[in-house]
Length: 463
Image (cartoon, rainbow, N blue to C red):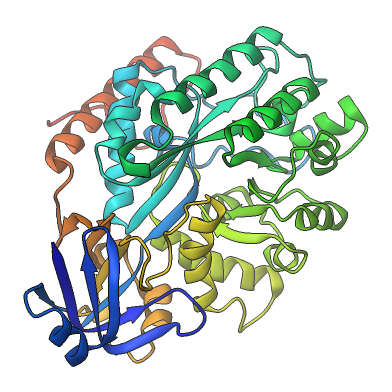
């Protein structure tokens, strides 16, 4: 029940100390028992399983604070269909996301979790409606999960970010609130606390004042975290201005939905005044740099952090690759700032690990330090793109790839070891996801002859 990884480099995630060289880490059951010089730790735990950590990094696992597992179905189909940044902001003509059966949703969610695990993710907040459709399937993966049941009450037919005046449907609100309560009763605290449940308001332009208040009251009653897509699209800004005469962040503040246990995603269509309001609330911001770049509009992360927001990271949709997110976060913010030295790669590591765990209120988890839960990853640096490894964190952020992650541990349990996934049947997951996705899209384009298949669409299936 005790494991020692020795002669290795340990990245704690904390500022002091941030890194230990030629060190060892001891893991007992689900906790980190000791960190220190290799000889000292090996002498303390002579009967432990011994793992040679030479040419490896031991570091905190990634916490993905904003993802939609099932939407991995649309990768290669929808990346070029972000909402426009110029009036009239309409999304008409874009290919809508297909309606899936619970079994189809489960197949796509398992695929997303598999990619997340292989990319070094140890914790993730999945945001969608009717998560119960596939909750059991993803819980079995062993990842630390925050299940965020998403609710809206804007009349059916409206899409997030779509201009227009808000019309509420009370029945949608009631059903959504019940879904959260039911999911919380079944899953919150399950698997010895590895699973928690959050309250998700879809977006300001999708949630009425009454529902926003009800969601806030429910979150407080359940004593959990909340999340919302905030200032995601310019069309969202237009709806709130036309419907309520204010801006989205002001709208949330007016109805009491801003607080220190809120994770606000995107925040890219904001005024400086809104950034100050959000920062003063102590809310966390999930910076989703890949989708920001894809949409041609990135948030002012440096300003949000200066105003008091905790910055965390997320993949959003179509990918679960947190390595891509780490690097993109640094490069996109530098490009926006026209800066050459900030943010630093060490900041990106904190955003993607400790800050994410704290934003999700996952207590006792996050940093690689004595007493913390053993949620960690082992990275091999013996690759051409990572040598010379003179400044390991910088090299990892700037040149690292998901395949460099060779082992993943959550709660002291190996989910992946030496490149082999242990908690899922990888071939079965890939085969089923490929079959299901082809079946869904072929039927969808057949049923919608007005929509053109994307260039290069492969309708074949080799199994």
